[in-house]
Amino acid sequence: MACRVFAWALSCSVAFAAGPHFVMRYFYDQDKTELQLIDLKFPSAQHGMAAGIVTEGKRIDPTLLRTTDGGAHWSLTPLARWLSSKDLPLSLFFVDDSQGWMVTEKALWFTGDFGGAWHKVGDLPKGIMKVWFLTTTHGWAIGAGKQVIETTDGGKSWIPVEEARQAPGAEATTVYTAIVFMRNHGIVTGWNQPRDFSLHPEWQDPSARSSAGLPGTTIILETPDGGKSWSSSSGAMFGRLTAVTLSLNGTSLALFEFINRLDAKMVHLPPSEVHRMSLERGVPDRVYRDEDTQITDVALTTQGTPYLAGHATVGLVRDNPIPGKLKVLTTSDFANWTEIPVDYRAAAHRAYLAIAEDRDVWVATDTGMILKLE
Image (cartoon, rainbow, N blue to C red):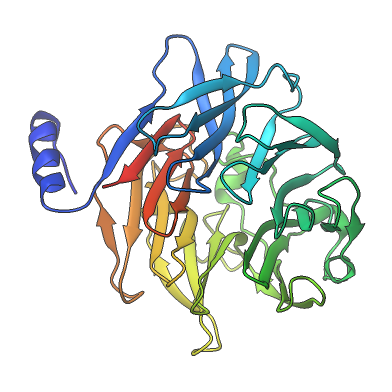
């Protein structure tokens, strides 16, 4: 959808009237402060929560956004009562619309009343970024340092998953970034890269703009039986596997993000690619790639309807400090993708998807916006 400056409101409203579109349900707009959202979860159609930080100059306040009425109203909840400004939230996970966990940089926290109160379960090993629980006691945590760890007591104690440690690559440069279960079928994905890659985005490091990207290794761990057994596979890849999602029909989507614009052979790389794996096909195939779009999250309904969220690229560099126009796409055949119209104000560096009760599709941006497909 292309909305020109002088006809922006009219053209957008005409497009919206023609079909489903993403409507702004929350927009943080306060003077001198900014809200950066880093995760979004909807354990039910009525209950939604986003985690992030509010910044004012050098001051940083860990914060949650909550709704209990399907997004009609949102409340901003500072976490200063529980967290220090140096213990920032990293991710959320819920087993139902009341019980859930929050991973912070230093610890794991649990709520039994959907964020009304939090209590510290215990410390986490350094580098842990996400958790996934099958029950209130049995779950896993993943992160940097080749870590996939398992708990059977709600996160009070952890044991390492040995298959994760045996993956190729050095411990210091191996990161597990995504975990998903559909019933007892679970997938953990990660990557490692050589030590001599830039730690800074291109706009901060001029040498990264012209330097060739070096290939790394993509790692996939899979369990068919709720974690009783795991198998692993790996392969060379220039991109970083940053997100994965599963459906009941056996389809999975994997998101690869390319930090550098060039590979070791000086071949141009897109901002991102989405690959599909299905039980019928047996081998992965690339289903989405666009030079002008950076995808940052993927989601599937239980029956396999896909959604991609990201933003239009801005300039030539990756990780541009200027946010791009929010983009959300879907398809019925994994070949022809349709861009869903979004509120014209929506822009992002990163976007996060959540599907509530397999029907309500939500997207949050790191610029403090939450939108719903209506």
